[in-house]
Length: 326
Ligand SMILES: Cc1cc2nc3c(=O)[nH]c(=O)nc-3n(C[C@H](O)[C@H](O)[C@H](O)COP(=O)(O)O)c2cc1C
Image (cartoon, protein in one colour):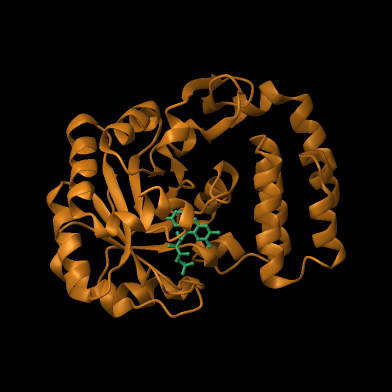
């Protein structure tokens, strides 16, 4: 896959599951990251084809929990993002998923204490030797492209130095979130520091931070010189942000999202979580819609709430047909 001139759906925990990724692509996203999944979790899994749904599932042995669901349709654009602190474990995990995805990405930006205390996410920013070890191990042993996503370090010089080391490992692209670990999401992203990384590297850089409107994709590209642009919250709040024809009304986006969740039998907790995030931004969870989402226990409950009962019934009664016509 090429990483030039691409609009990219950012990795988002509990949000970036198959329905949102497919919807983002329908509206115009060229590359769609999955949510970060920790390597420890993947190595307990096996790959299974689900012929009824038409999906490929990475399933936890023993419990049968679906840890990652993908499908052939997104094979050329989905990037599997992993949390790791160990090269061998990362490789073992990547080997389970790599045939079904366009690239494997290492998350080096997560500031959550769970990640940092496990030596993962942003903890890696302070360990360039380990970063090198993980990325070169993946590069040498996988046919699938490898990418990674970082945050800014304390000075632009430090970020550029790390980015250069990362480039030398042979990764195909580097996503840069223009905030430091200590920055809050409401702090403006520092596009000028992303520009410093772009100027220093030859590989494609994916610029990330504060893209909320379609026009922002062009603005950040011009400001940073980056090849491609990634949106997280802008896409979470209205995933049609990727559409060159302007945003689709929010009510329609939610309904489409519920339909995709039904079609791909998405985990109801993940669907509810994503809907709640959408509602919290534009409205309030205390209002009837928010309360009803919280109370919903099944995808059928959500179908009822969004007027998609007929669609839900049709899909559930015609699973074989639905997976065949997709
Ligand atoms: C709900 C949510 C979940 C996120 N999960 C991840 C993740 O799994 N991996 C990751 O690298 N970044 C994650 N991020 C960070 C985003 O990918 C992105 O770097 C950050 O939100 C800045 O982009 P934005 O200004 O467009 O929101 C998450 C952000 C949000 C809002």
